[in-house]
Image (tube, rainbow, N blue to C red; front, side, top):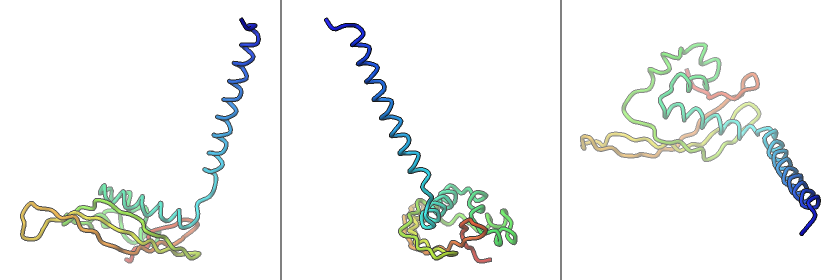
Length: 147
């Protein structure tokens, strides 16, 4: 039989080692989280967030991604009125983001569900491709929308 103190010492060593491994993992994860996003990553994330709001038909939230100059001229209510009920957005994927110092182009694929012409009640899923322009204003990236 092993001495009781030896058993406690080994258990304490295992706890210390496990604790050190957990702490090291948390520190490494924290350092990765502190790494600043590139402009391309920021704009791709914001484009995805904006489209998630549009897909949910949360137009007030989507409106907040428009550049300040647009929001100064177009009210949130008028913005929401631009969207009809002819189709339903299903998904949006960002293919690429290319940035210059004050402007980014985001290439997206948008999947829409729409009524099939000549087939009452039947729907089709249609995919389309588009480029979005995002501009940097006062340190933040905004969706550029023509007035």
